[in-house]
Length: 145
Length: 145
DNA sequence: TTGACAAATAGGAATGATTACTATATAGTA
DNA sequence: TACTATATAGTAATCATTCCTATTTGTCAA
Ligand SMILES: [Mn+2]
Ligand SMILES: [Mn+2]
Ligand SMILES: [Zn+2]
Ligand SMILES: [Zn+2]
Image (cartoon, rainbow over all chains, first blue to last red; front, side, top):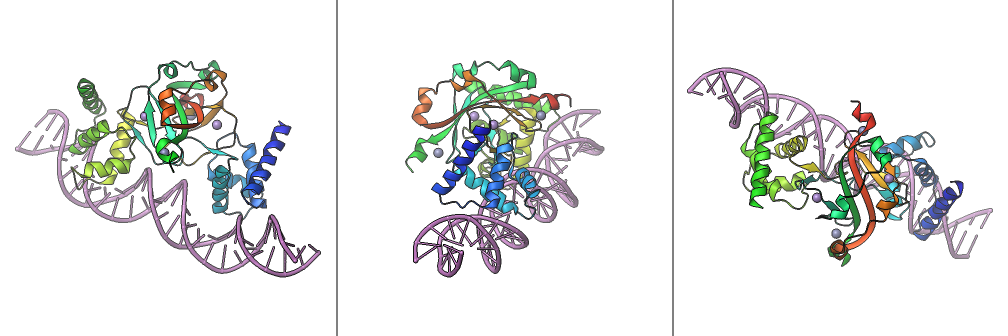
């Protein structure tokens, strides 16, 4: 996975150059820390990790940097996180199309999706209560700016 | 869908009786408002709606009631909402198993899931950028209390 | 290599969502 | 009807996120 890592680091430099983002020690460190992470960290988790190296880095810098990385596509946001709690009165099995611009969630039904099998590896990791396909994208309303 | 609605209202009374939740005008109204909703409302959205009927209901009551409805299974929470932003450095297509107790998100890969087709109806609603299967449940760690 | 300057940073304050607190009111029931 | 555990309104506290500002720094053109 060394090549992979160099690739993504190159992407980091390229994207930063593209978007006129300066390569600072803070950004570089946050990028490295993210690359190591496998736990879908929160901003606060990353903050705690990078402080071991740069003890006076500010939380705001970490947070802002993570958001700018999200904007230039070096990382993604996990679906739904960072939004207010949203309540789901529709108890039938169904699926979601989420607009990443306006955060509208559209329900849809699909038998094929209902029937997907839970992989054995996942069955071992816990008990599944709910299966859902989440499609993310940009809805028609937001498409027209 | 009238029968359906009576069914779910009966479930509301039954579950409330089960769990010793009193049927108050506030809960009843919030239940009715939820039943009508198709937009995955936030607590604040429900608060605005119910105030038209009960003008001095408090936000806290609405919020608390929605959470208690979630606990007794009358409504669900939309996946991920209400959590801190979580960053996803893994840019390969993959899927998630989320523990609803500890909120750990486990990645897994699955070719069959990668290959699911986007329904035509959804294609019309917008541009899909990301397809992901989200399995929710309780992980092994949380299973043992 | 140097100087100018737009961009980025640290530190802290403001905002907004969520949760906690408490005195009063009320649903359920004997 | 009267009792009592619950629920409520109103408000305060907490926590994540975003904003502000004085200062520092990376980049680039000379
Ligand atoms: Mn839904
Ligand atoms: Mn993931
Ligand atoms: Zn949209
Ligand atoms: Zn768990």
